[in-house]
Amino acid sequence: MRRLWLSLGMFAVGVSLMVAAQIAGAAPERRGGVFVVGTTGASVQVDPQVAYFTTSWWLEYATAAKLYNYPDKKGPAGSLLQPEVASGYKVSNGGKRYTFFIRKGFRFSDGTPVTARNFAYAIDRSRTPTSARRARSSSPIGTGRASSARRRSTTGTEPT
Image: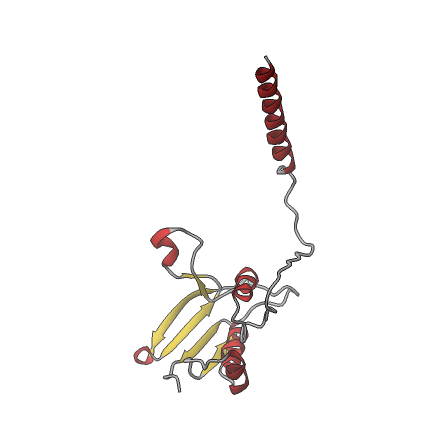
């Protein structure tokens, strides 16, 4: 008889916990606000040009838009690059020039539109000797220029 009451009591506790979990998960979606992340370990560099710790990569992946990105899918479907900010690209000059076309609608947190010039700045910045030294690498990306607000051309060169 004691086992029966213990079993019923445990069943009631389990049902109560499941109901509480359902109620807690039913909160409406919130937009805006501040997201705070705490971590322990080595200091984290959030500058994409010099970040090389795994925690930095996690933060960059969660907060930075990329020209192309891998989809969040399992198996072979997750290994195919898909356009994120780019709507497409064109290869010319015997494979030495890549022109990326930027989709409209992407904005920085302050509301400023994302343009090809923003990507040109980031690519050119990664090629500067100061950034290359700080990142402990040099970029294989060659010279580039933003030819319009929606298009970015880059000419590749061999790393030095």
